[in-house]
Length: 206
Image (cartoon, rainbow, N blue to C red; front, side):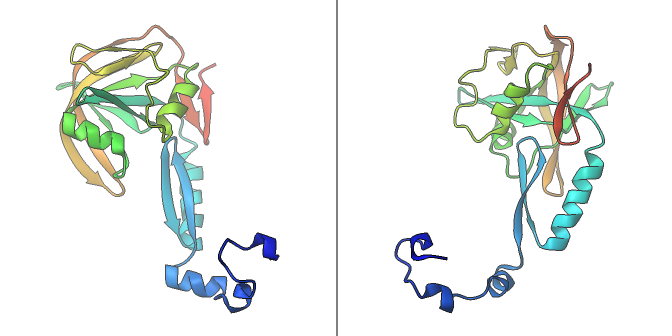
């Protein structure tokens, strides 16, 4: 390290007296890696063994292709949304669906308070929409065209389908919540081909 590389305010002999990386990591509890699990889901993994296990878990589970959704709500008049790959139907009678947001999700905190949400099934041409709602942007709806459902939830234009729900149950599931929603309304979108996610990449049904 040259003097030009030193952070402002650090003396030139700091490198010779600075603790080794191994010693620093022993105090911190090991190495840390910000691990991308799903679109919009970043998890901090601590330690080489845990990182290797997480990569293997992601690589194997990534063989399972899924659709991509954006789950939306409105809280205090402000639209909120999050990209969600982990969505599934649960029951026909009564009509129930489920999705699994991270416990740290700010969007889900809004959904939990509003007790309503709409799941938008993204179309093949909407990878940019998925990326927008997976980002940390302050106003994710700035360039999104949408209409309110009968319950006032944001229904994004150009999807392949949607379900409008009320929150029925929320269960803890590791670092996620399992959210059960009761379907109040649903419909087809204008698009035909869904956006898929497989092996860490967006795909289409073509």
